[in-house]
Length: 335
Image 1 (cartoon, rainbow, N blue to C red):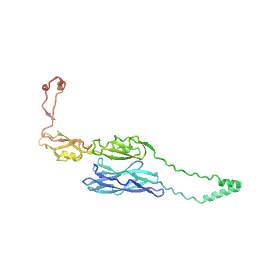
Image 2: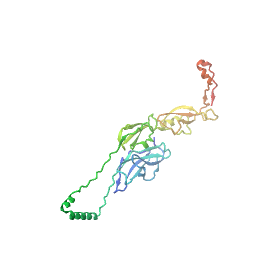
Image 3: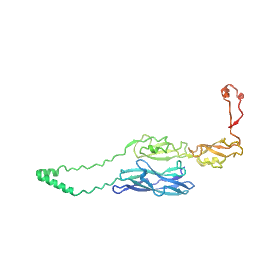
Image 4: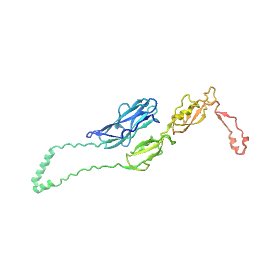
């Protein structure tokens, strides 16, 4: 399970814009160290959709030390450039354990930065244009008479009011995220917000999406949320230096895994002074991410050397034509 937790926080932040300047705002999340030990964590912002990483900064140190059970606040400051179109721009806060960044990380809830439209301030027209128009009208009136005066004053005075065309979000088919690694789907999200739903304690392959909502090929506007469900998996723990037949299974159970078979460690078994009963490694090895409750085999040192039964190849060729009692087997040999 991840060391850090980012509980549900605010879902939107209304940015403010003065005139045609940048749109700015801030939002605060809580980050909690759930482990029983102190841990160094690194914070970052993960943009999605049309959001850009350079819009977001985290106040204070991005890399911090968290005491056991400690909760710290993370203030995200947002500054969208002045030329960014008005709309919703999603993002989330990410916390990573510095000592295991590839496997120990968590993302908080998706929040939305709402960028308002820029306020266009019309420049005041110079008055000399008004005087120029008056002068032109007077000249026309003097030159062509009253009829043309009335015509020019009353006609061609319609002003076409510009229409603000609001373009609806483009609709497209939701991509298929099922059977893909949850860490790689963001780059092919097609503009949709990816909401990750961890479902631990299953037997499915770790970090592979097994379900999504809405389903693939559903037609939705870009920017909508797509929930992907996956098994986060369990990391095979490090084996304590003093692990034995008795203690190694408990190490696996504490990590949410099941002890499998004891296998013979060929490198030490049967050698003088060998630590009989010592468990030397897990299979799969420590650090491997596997499904929860998976059985993990254990290599252990045995009193005798690991035995291998060797049979001459020609025996296999005649075994169907010979009684079992006639099969000549070599003495047990060790590797």
